[in-house]
Length: 215
Image (cartoon, rainbow, N blue to C red; front, side, top):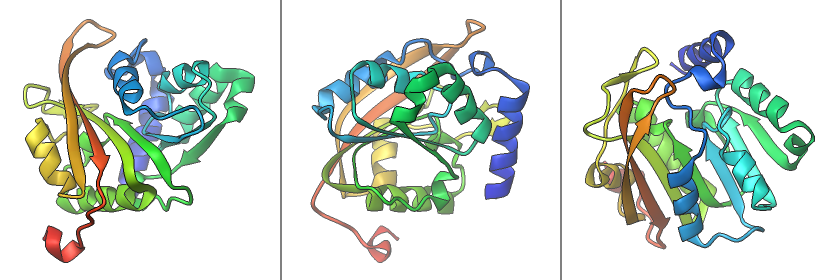
């Protein structure tokens, strides 16, 4: 499964420029709004999941955030970002990994994911994602997840997706994550089609749940 995912996304970014994929944003406004709401300061540890070719990292560098990590399954997507950033790419920690196999060596203050989680249509993969995320965060850490809303497309990049509202997303994450805020977005693709997204901001609480409790 992981090898198939990696092959798919390497093919996408080999065949297309970042500006040619449907989820491309020139301005990640909702993400920046929610990141500002968290109050994470410039010295906080921030990780962007699936942010390989996204310009969010550019904006966070402009805001002088000091500890930025970008994880993507596609080495090609990360290569695009490094080329775009030039010398500034050296200020970012780049990780090529499938998120379900990621073994974090840093505890993060903020976890951001726009348009990765909704591609995990297998229940087991979603549990792996949440387990990885839980291990990567401390009590009080912030999570911003953006996915297709219930009114969003059922497929993207030729793949089935799982669509969400705030309640459904909260059930996936369990009791150790508290929903703080949810925002809707009508994303306009590079070819002017509309895609409905939801952004959910969670805070990790002190209560942890075991695998048995989650089941």
